[in-house]
Length: 572
Image (cartoon, rainbow, N blue to C red; front, side, top):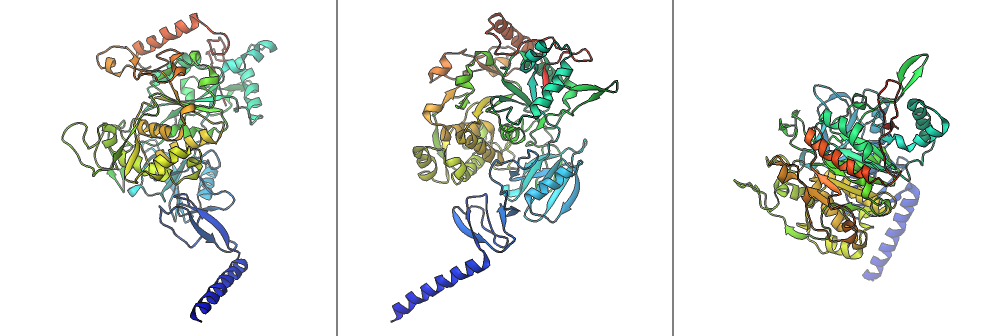
């Protein structure tokens, strides 16, 4: 009798619950890992995975890390907001001048508020407030890790004037056929035609020129106006990425038109900004940050790729190159090296595993328990262990554990890889335990596979993991053996320390594709602020020009703007 009563009680309770659901209009929402879809009232722990919850009533909202966003556009990993703004978790803003603080936890609205205010350059969001900031010359805006790597801290940088640059050779044929002698006039028509066609990028590659640290003006001038115009393939566009936005007009990049007999600028042209480096400012969480402006030196430089994709979507692929690395792109078959296979500059598929140990400081190099020093350094740096942040090992492990709960990434992993790295691995074990050079890398954007790689880069970047750890781990986990490509890479760091420019292969190639091209297709480091380095690259280009392969590559063109300067780029 008691058993029967209990069964009827359960049935009545279920029916009553169903009636409540229908009456109150409760929707079914899935919660996955750290990118939450929660109700207005509910707060869930950060590490909950695959939990079901509900949103009630007419004011249905999605929640992103306990931050509400509109239901029609829930935030997902790597997805850009309006204006091409990439929301990044686990960071706070430092520096700048605060414009306003509003009691608003809606990320999309916070971004719009900043976009609508021309003074606003960035925003910071927590679970309660939206803070908007203006940049300041003496106290510039930058980003730093949130205390405790709090995932509820989200920032976004507005980059209104960042532009891509397209080689003049992309439209020089139409100039010749029309008989027009003014590059500027033709460039303006080309600029307008490009913006009238939203699919113009679908067959092009975006070359991301990433600067590790503050720009050396002479180096950038040479890269923009001498080295790269003779290096890039003609289907490549260029975007310059710097720690702080710079005006590219100062480096000869301009698109001017005449109006009423006066020379006027058509558009403002700035570099894209990767702000994930420290500056010497006072911060309430961390105190005085290191006075060494180069202490991060591109440690999180890999974030330049998702930042570029957010601002300039739709490219067939994204090619990230550090400013002191150069690529013999003219030896690359685009059907192999610039298509649907990502490439790296280390032997792929070689890794080990390592258990996490308590962090400690040793009195000598490499300052910690892990044999490669960068694993021991503070995350977000490449030269210090001051215990301000987690170690790069701990950051990489946290990112890996997060990644295994992200379906938009794990769905492209093979069953074997997912089992090895996410199912059978303990959450205190770093596997793959690997590192590799990342001065140049290519990721396709033609399918979910390439998109997932950039999303994974975003996630590791949010954890402020050193780029030479991040990309090697991501590549080892996500890229199947049949899609692996290793770019021949030559390093000259050891010879440079002795005052020489000698570049030797850094690793032994394991795949045939790389053996068919120049053994030093990618070389590093070349500092274009130095005459010897610049002349070295000019000698390489001279050989290329002597053995020219036709019109697939850019070449010097005497296209002159109205003020008499050569112009090689059309800003878009």
